[in-house]
Image: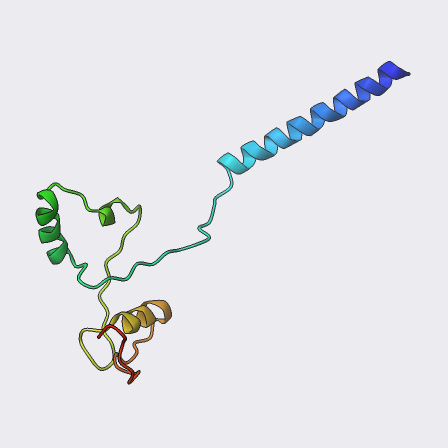
Length: 113
């Protein structure tokens, strides 16, 4: 009786380990992982015609900036409703919502201005 009990427990443990191993292999190789967080950097003056002199100033034309080491990068130009050059808030609103907003909507001055 004791031998049959041990055999059944070992067989159950073996099946459990095989099932867990196959699950790990399945998730590592065949499941597509969706991005769960996107970080958006919005900066003024990041146009290619301004980045090239920055690279040259930092150490030559072949120098890579920290911005260049990011895995994905897109350059976007947008405008606010009332000015051709929007501030950061109007640019972020246009990117996030797809709707242009007014650049000077808030009459309050910034603390650092």
